[in-house]
Length: 214
Image 1 (tube, helix red, strand yellow):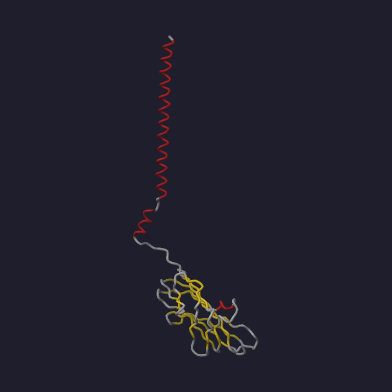
Image 2 (image 1 turned 90 degrees about the vertical axis):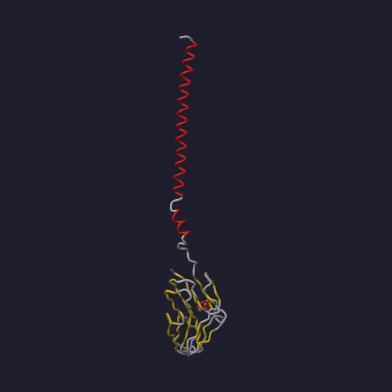
């Protein structure tokens, strides 16, 4: 075989080899492209799982997270006289917080804006005029002018010097939007429900609070 024949044969095999390599390379690139496309499809599918349901809920006006409902109020500035007569409404003019603007300090009333189950707590700090006399002290949570829950205690006089008495009550109850919740108190001796004339620590004992649980 002449040199020219050998060269021709070599070129022929080289071209064939290059064609095979190019074909394999193109096949590999196609496989990579398909894997990338499939990966994008899978990712899009995963990222959109549940989206049609969510969109349907939004467009249909589904359940929304309710505004939190909670408040707490004190009486730091006004003494409230208590006699042996009818119960008096307790005043709580200072709001510590009111998340949904539901406590009216002008009425000293909590008026919820939505139906729900609420926890309500009230307490008073009472200073009798005569510390020598045994006496009874009571507090009531009132819903729409009806007694809902009361707390009371008996205190024994003795002539010794003490600051005063604390009584409280709490309840978990179902309320409707627009209900009016207030606090009343009474005692078997005259005295004052205090806030301004006692220590910073004790004055917070005259307080009124509520929070929606569900």
